[in-house]
Length: 213
Image (tube, rainbow, N blue to C red; front, side, top):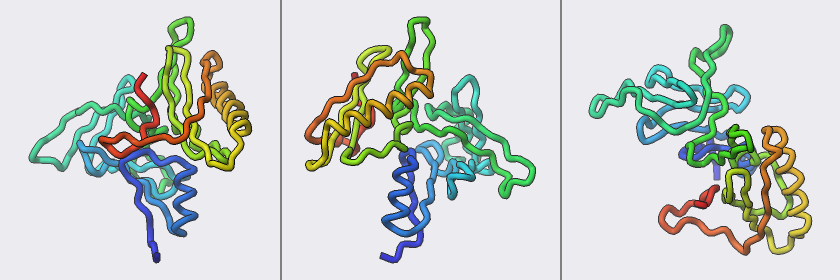
């Protein structure tokens, strides 16, 4: 195939998936950010530049961790300060930037894809499954999360037939402990369980990262 570019949309794009697509198709990957409320929210051409928001099409506001969208081009069904569950912070364009658009920093996708934990003092912190997109373990094919308590979760792991589950478990435990420590979630307990195959949701065809408790 003579691929000019690959466009990703609909789901958060992790670093490992982007690298894989670029390698397989030998083409740049465009990360397009949209939603049902506004099909054109932003675009990321280069991860180092970040996600640029289309300020000329939408007004995006963040207040108390909540995202509000005002779409400037939808005259048929205007949306004014419509609340979305996306998690991000905004960074204004700086003098000397190539584009005058606001950047979305820490775009984590929908709020329902985030695991929230609580310590003994009532303090809450989150962990997004895409936080481990960067950890690559030989033999690990797929994984899912299930929160089992306010400070506990388990991971389901699917491995390749020829892989060593003992090795995969050891690497998952070590790398996940490091990620939790960096997030200040040392108190969170987690377990690794192996399954023969992680099945997609029969209704959506997608493999959910987080299973219902």
